[in-house]
Length: 308
Image (cartoon, helix red, strand yellow):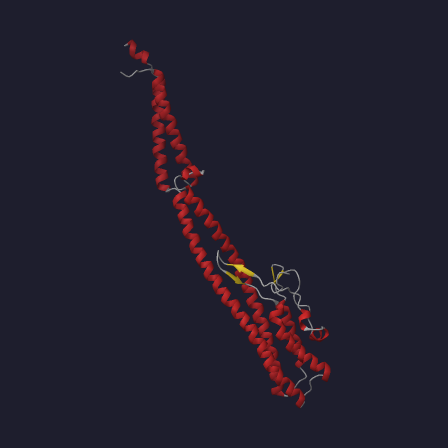
């Protein structure tokens, strides 16, 4: 036969009241935060899966941020390389036009402008860092601004201050690309062509109008050299463009993976809001019922029953 006492009844009702209070607090926390809980214990037995998913997600998001920086660099390089290639093509056009018109008086002035454009393109900066300087990102890679600087230096190579470290970028755990170019590699052939024209003028005097036979022969011989410089720069721009495509594809893959991981994490860590609200309402109802029973019990006593 079970014993019946006021203290026992209080104990039972109080335990129910505390259980209802805890259920309400838990449901209220889930509705407020949208998450299953605030500690790893709340996610058992999927805690290992959650930790692994968050770790991979952080790494993928790191590659996404890195990819955006690489994309910005490649876009800036694309513009600089194409401008340098255009300078070579424009210089070739100046010589061809001079030969066609038989006038040489404007050649050196135009070549000076094309050379300056090429030099400044190879000195392009992004975020205050020189793109074509290798690892020496704070050093201006091209130390020349006039055609006479080319013949004044012992060699064209002496005008380039970049080091030999070509920038390399990681796209994911296993793929890296050469994401940068060096001013010396890209500018040497073009600068050599400019230097040859400047040296000819210094040795033989300015081009005349009309051109002499010797001047025509010299200019005709320079056309393929500027063509070759233009082709080499265009090839570099094409390689840079191919890298842009690879980075874009990599970013798309990382973005898809990040979305998948976010969904996986949400399935584990986030609550079904409709279900959570329903549990909250049930917990509130249970709490009200327990509180009412407790209040009723406080107003009664077994002694009252024994007196009747």
